Length: 138
Length: 323
Image 1 (cartoon, rainbow over the protein chains, first blue to last red):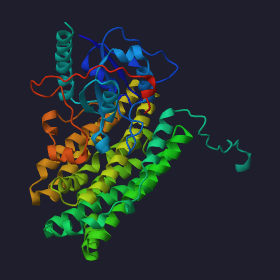
Image 2 (cartoon, rainbow over the protein chains, first blue to last red):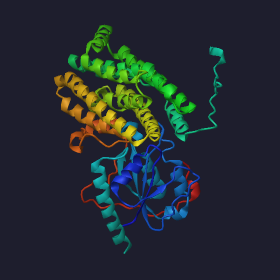
Image 3 (spheres, rainbow over the protein chains, first blue to last red):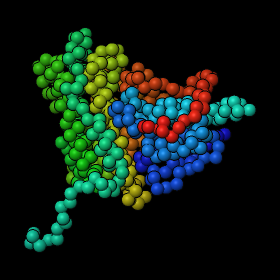
Image 4 (cartoon, rainbow over the protein chains, first blue to last red):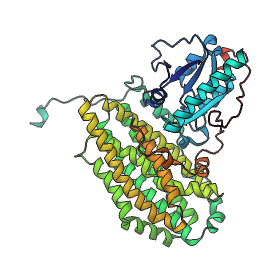
């Protein structure tokens, strides 16, 4: 199975989701001063959304920093986006923005720290996804 | 003597010296999202309003009056009560924005009323709001926590429950009408309110979690017990309030699923786990779609046996990253 990288701000929602998943995952730090993980193999990114009403600023700055590196970007295979439906049309928009920029699929969207159903779908989905990925690359 | 007591200097707020980056992030989000009801063409709903049956109109006015009461409380009691608890001067400034926007929300319902309704209908609904025991009881429970005798973190729990849970028995109805292509401009206005409340609940929940970090384990456990117990009490009242409002049009169970779903989200804003199991939170898809219209539904992982479309890797230059 490939890797998992995530960002979570001080609200801790995405971090709680990743904890529940129970998979090994690298965290993009909140502070720009801390070291950014350097994935060595293909990975899926889990990213929360911070868009304003017009959709600007959807992807957190630290995630942009992370993806600005061509080496890291080359290993990205898919994105899982978090958000809140209460933000209407911009719900989980970070997923779509990253998908468009990096030409990788939005694999899943969930709200806040996710539900039990989200956790089991993402666990099963990632397993299947990496299976597919291996077949594609063989 | 009073003038001999050591006095702290009065401090001006310096936005270039942040103690918590979240304050500026949320300030920017709230100020960019600023809106006024005049921006929404409510008068386009006049014809649609006329197609509602009289009991549906009465229900809608009552629901909006109940929401007005909560916004009024949050504007004049809730947000101001949390200002002395602020850990940073910037948090106080954000709370002043929250307070003002709650006044805008409260004012918006009156714009809806003056556009769509007759004065006697509206006056009757305001009387109803003062007399309805469930509405009064839930508002009272929250206001009691805002009072001086409570603690800063209990106030935040009460506030998150008001912003992220108590509004939703009301927000359901305009989403329902909108899913049936009725009162769609009113729904647009309500979505602006929902968006604001989501930021408020998120931010106050975030500050709550920062506050918890300063406490020992025993104090944290006591607050968690308090939060769940307050949620149970509020839910109990909400269930009765919901039945009283929605039994007449047969939507009570549908609304309750929406309440469970939002109660869980309110608890998540505080950093807690869900209370209601997934099967109790199966919100009518039409309501979810009305909440976030035009939000594309890419859901590879819950699709049944569909093949994945994996995009071709196109070389992306750094300058493309113009977010």
